[in-house]
Length: 171
Image (tube, rainbow, N blue to C red):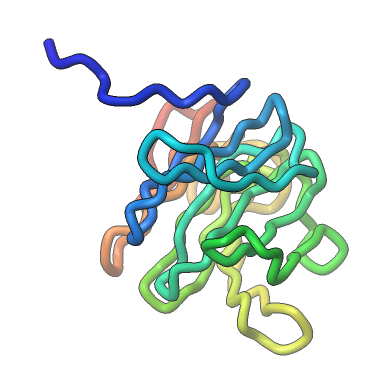
């Protein structure tokens, strides 16, 4: 059984990302910090994300954080300079925990507490455009219904969602 090459200390880690540059990013939810490592060395961190979950890389190399406790998504550069915030006022976020990014840079967001999946173009006018929504905000099962969606994955033109409390994967 192979031994881990490195161990990174980050309280209540919820998300991890191996960036295209080789840098490793972690979402240390318990500390509220997005951390960056080069090899085994801590190089940078940004706070203000207590309870945040997922972290993902956009096609241009930017990093997105699903900051559910603050009901927002935050975009960072690879050096963790804050570039953009998409917040609940415009998109109706209740608890955006998980996300993926398609080849066009659109965000696919599992808003667990709102029982919805959102498709967002962050480059749209006025700070981003909501392109589509699956789910109506109430938990349920059946076409267009979710109960605590916790995962989002894009594979080419296919989109998958982990519909946690319905014990299913939806494509």
